[in-house]
Each structure stands twice: as structure tokens, then as C-alpha cells.
Length: 430
Image (cartoon, rainbow, N blue to C red):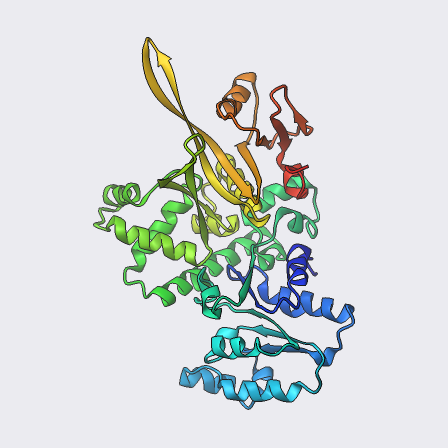
């Protein structure tokens, strides 16, 4: 069963012939290779590109390597990468005319000197390049720097809820519960049975994601790093910082880990796209607050597997889903802080109110509150109170799991349910 990834396909289509190396990044197993080698490949064919002008090469394929006189087993035994001269000779033999050629390279990090090779091909006006990889370097936010300013990144996330529902057999209500529990890794979504999904997620985490971080950063104390992951998994959407986490280690684990080491580990997790952080933003003061931050998992199935599916808080999980969807749509997302001065018993006191998300994309800005349920007028007033303290004209939105129609109140605040938000990319902008 094929899961359509039109959102990312269109990103690649928009970047065709732009003179840059299109680099598909993202967490492991989110579908990068399938997007490039199957979905985009078939798009090129359907667009009239001759098959001989599409050069696909996977550097972890024994068949492909044999085309250039390399042997997968020998490469592994000798712990070396693919000879770039052999690869370049093969590419040259495939260029039989002056027409446009499309170079689709998978696991390109296995090619020695791949940065120099690909940057060299940019000089050819009849070559359009697309690459992906899955080792630690390609799972890093700094991979684009390898291409000396000529890399154009397409960052890919696990399945959105809309993509998930394209293959889910039940209704959207059952679907969201399944999505919030097992996430959107395509290989997990296509598996049958809850026990099979859970076991696969647990194996992915331990055998792939954690191992990548160890290999890239040569972590000495693996136990502390995994303990930190467990703490973050149990506290998604909560404000925290390295010092606070250090105190948790000291109290619970009797550990002497330092705040600097914790910050380093947090950077490792973000660098691998496993988690993302949202910084606090003072809306009235128009300034960022360095600490604390909120952390969200790129895939909730991985987060839940990390804590053995023991802890499932709907409020924080829904907040994580909304955050991921906003990021997928291209918004930068911060945690809003509104500070006001109020007089209490004749004395002035400063109070802080939180706006879950401050989202920016170009000139557009949205303030969003995630409210799992709004059972009473009192709860509604609690949600909108921060909005009433913001004196600009940007749209203010409440997203709830309650089944309510999309509507505006007398203050111009929009309320919509999470299903409409997730299934319609224009739900907040329209």
C-alpha cells in the first residue's frame, strides 16, 4: 500500500532545475528514500522524462555498487567508503547527450568525498541533483553547510494526520487516537496489530535512533543519556532547562551529571531531529527568553515507546500533535509569554500568562491555545484571558478536541476542533 506524500513531492517539484543540490533531511524511517526513489521518480516519468535520463543510485545496494566495480561486503570489511572516481566514471558513461539528467542518490554519505563530487556536478547545466542519507551526518541540522551554500533542504517529518488518514481504515476519531498513540512512522502505520506496532517502535528506538546518537557523538555515559530521554518523554510540553533537569537527576538518580552535559545531550537529540524545542517569547516586550524551553517529540509513537506506553496524557499529547503540524506547515513556533501588571490590595503585582504557540511564517502570525476540552464558561475564560491581554491584530485561535463547528466569538477569537485543523492546511489561515 502506497502512502501519498504530495506535500513533499510538491516541494521537490517546485525546486526542479534551481541550480542547487536538493537535500532531503529528516528523522530516520520518515520516508525520505521512498519519496526520492519511488514517488519523485514516478513523477519524472509521468512528466515525460525518459528513463535513461534518470540516474538512480543507492550506495547501500549491492546491485548498484556492482555497476561501478564495488563490492558491498568488501566495503564493510575494509570499513571504507565508495571510491568517488569509480562513481564519477559511471555517471560520465550515463551522460550520452546534452539533455537534462536527474541524479537521485540515496545513502550518499557512503560515497567518499561526496560533498566535493556533488558540488563539482553543479557546474553541469544539464544535471539536476537530489540526495538523501541516513547516517549521523545526514541526520544533523548542519548538513546543508557541507554543500558550501549550494544545498536546498527539504525537511521531512513522519506522516501528518492527513497522510495517516489516507490509509487508515476507521473514522477520524478512532484515527486520531491511534495516531497519538503509535505516531506516523510509515513502516509502523502499515503494520497490523497493536503489539506488532509497539514492538517495532521499541526496536527502532533502541537499534537505530539511540545508536545513531552514540556513534555520532561518542557518548561515554549511555545510561545518563537514556535517562534524560526518559525524563523528556515523561514531560513533553513542560517548561524545563538543564539546571532543572540536573536537579531531577540529583534527587531521583543520585547522579552528579552537570547542567552543561545535559545541555550537550539535549543538543544531540535536537541535532538528530528526534526532538524539537520551542523557546519562550515575550509578546509585549518583543524579545526571546533564553530559558526555560518546551520540548516536543518529532514522532509520538517513538515517545510513547520510550516510556513503554505507560503514560498517555491527552492534553500534552494533543499539544505535541499541534506543534508538529505547525512545524510541518513551515511555521516557526515559540511559546508565548504575556506579562501584565495588576493591582491587588493596592499593590502592583506582575503576572505572566502563557500562549501555547506563537506561530510565524513570513508576515503572518497566529496565537494558538491548545485546549483538550472546554467544558465550561470558566474554562473558556481561562483560555482566552492571555489573548485579551495582547493588543495587536494578529489572529487568535483556540484548538480543541471538542466536536465544535469553526466559529468566531465577539472578540474575534477563532475556535475550531483539532480534526478540522489537522485535515485542512488552510484551517487557520482561511
